[in-house]
Image (tube, rainbow, N blue to C red):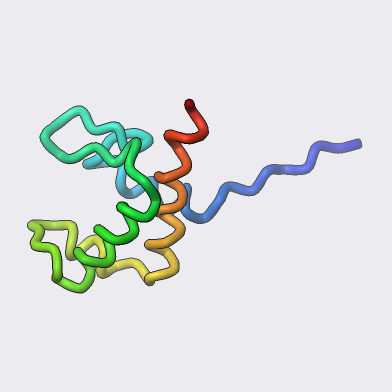
Length: 87
């Protein structure tokens, strides 16, 4: 039987834009905070706070405003799942 192609979760696709600053899989190698190991709840809350302006930022507010709340949820779920997949 032919192999069925595995679809890539939308959160994983959306997360690719985070890698430029936060590193591959959210593992930053600079002064930019590491996302890897953070819970989905923490990431979602932080992104929503950046989006609303409740959490001050230099660039994250602008990035977060580019995503719907559902997309933020998907990104958070993806990053939140990484540390549990690799433990």
